[in-house]
Length: 95
Image (cartoon, rainbow, N blue to C red; front, side, top):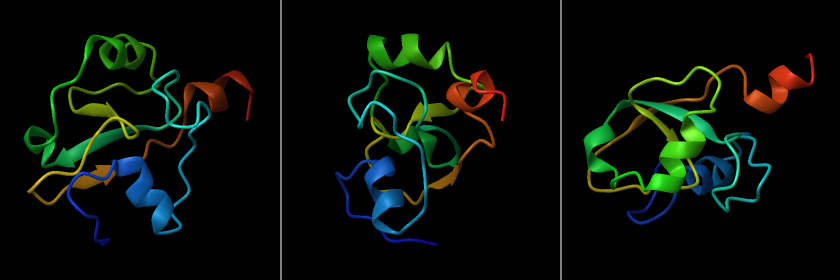
């Protein structure tokens, strides 16, 4: 379990706690490498904008509660977040 302040992105919270998450576009909402699945607390995150929705359509392992962690902002509720095993970059590089 990690603590993250309200208003911080999930990506920054993970990185601040030495949890490695890929973020190839440097958190500018231009790729899908920071894709996460929010298992609990999804409704507490802000609405997805059109750009994030379009990018998520290309994410590896997309689920109904998928978000780009650079765009998902911590709110009042606790979150349970899963980092998928693969990203689209990982799969395309034949790892």
